[in-house]
Image 1 (cartoon, rainbow, N blue to C red):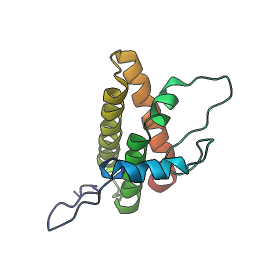
Image 2 (cartoon, rainbow, N blue to C red; image 1 turned 30 degrees about the horizontal axis):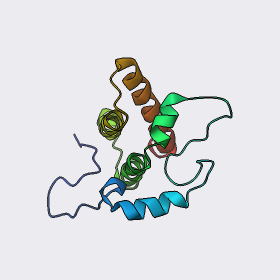
Image 3 (tube, rainbow, N blue to C red; image 1 turned 90 degrees about the vertical axis):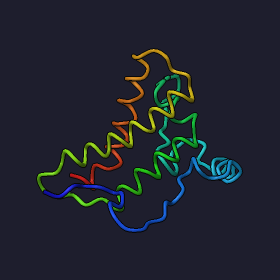
Image 4 (tube, rainbow, N blue to C red; image 1 turned 120 degrees about the horizontal axis):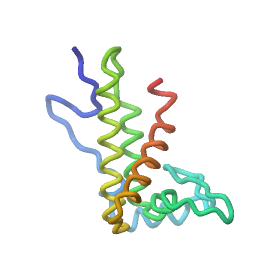
Length: 137
């Protein structure tokens, strides 16, 4: 049986810093040049005029967390290997990536209601799978 992972299991490796690990000045410069409609780099999502989608707002209003999520998803997309019969391992790793981002967003926005946290987790998961869909299916 082969385990699916995008992390090194043995040997020496060097971690590449994600967006959240970078200096704030670099992130500000990158976010200031972002598409005002929110359809640029990362997982920025457009919103309809007059329509408030709270989970989308929570994700879009935390650009460092959003960029870190996109970096993790992009790194996963570029490095994972899918082995027939190990789909559950792939899904487990994606849930880890989503879970880490959701924890950061909950802490950032001080979300205490479980219904809000569930909405946010569903939203982040849905969009993560949308980004990865063509690569894992």
